[in-house]
Length: 249
Image 1 (cartoon, helix red, strand yellow):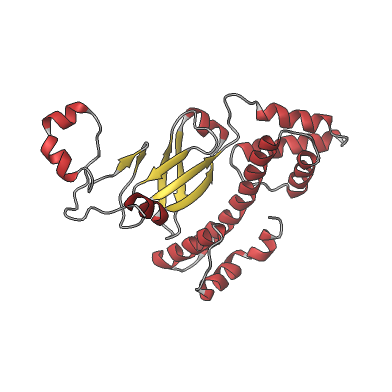
Image 2: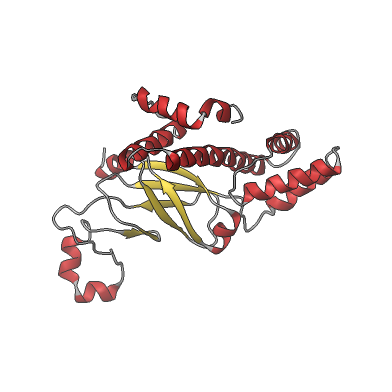
């Protein structure tokens, strides 16, 4: 097994859903790691479905000073010796992600979005809603739900969300469109849970490390990893009423 393969196995994989406007125009989005730490991630413009971004988080080994890795001939020509000696050790920038480095594994971020340059997913969904045999008020509610989903917002109108999911799942829409909608819809449900967690942590008397541990544990649950700390699971259950929220997921 090569060093590169070993490195890849150690990377933390994160799937995030990005709002239509941010994916189209570019922007930033907060991502929480399994350690509970949060990072502001730069999303490039015209960011398409399943775009991969790498977040460098390893701390330099010999010096606390952070140096940006540059790949241009001008830099190499003037500082060639420095570049060769340190470019592999001091990295705080790659693929547009400018972050403070930590002594943690890198994070591979998979972007999901309803933005698409070639397929008008919004029109496809709105056509399904308009052609559905339901009341006009229900169509309006489903349209509002889709807009919130596309904008990466949590959904309060769960009956309309469930109705929209039924309309799409029972249609003959392209499977790739249906898959992307399902990811977006599931993300909107998770946003609601995350809001509950953040509201509870804000109102709690827990210290910074305890809050970070709870956030990290939740991220592990999202990723389907085993949790050995049942005390933290009980805290999540207590402060957020997860069973009552997650029954909709």
